[in-house]
Image 1 (cartoon, rainbow, N blue to C red):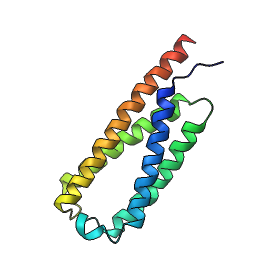
Image 2: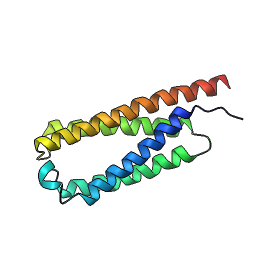
Image 3: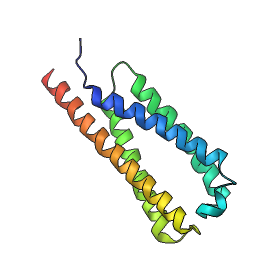
Image 4: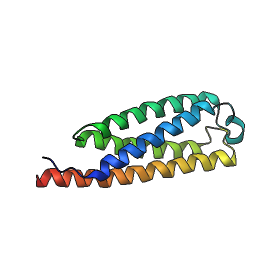
Amino acid sequence: MHAEPDLLRRVLRIDGWSTAVFGVVLLAGAVPLREPLGLPTSWSVPFGVAMLGGAAALGLIAGHPRISVRHAACAVAGNAVSCVALLALVFSGVLPLTGLGVVFMLSGAVVVAVYAALEYAGLRRLTGVLAAG
């Protein structure tokens, strides 16, 4: 039997669920959050849909009996790219974000950076187990 570290699976599941919740918030709150955040509906709806797709992918990866290194690396890369994209949106001025919107986006960047770091740690444990096994 293959002894796979639980950290990666646990973080992928939490990441998946929180991504799904955030996607639903962006979709359900697209209109009510538009003014307080300065996030146009034309941005929040596609973001919400993309997040639901990402959440489904994370759930599939976490639910697989044996998490592949390639899929785990994609989750790490996806979170890293999301972090950079959120920072770019905040600092580029592309969106008419309010102060609360800036805090909202920066908070999201921090959250995905933490997930990327935790998943990377889980990936390193996984590759260590695979090398030892």
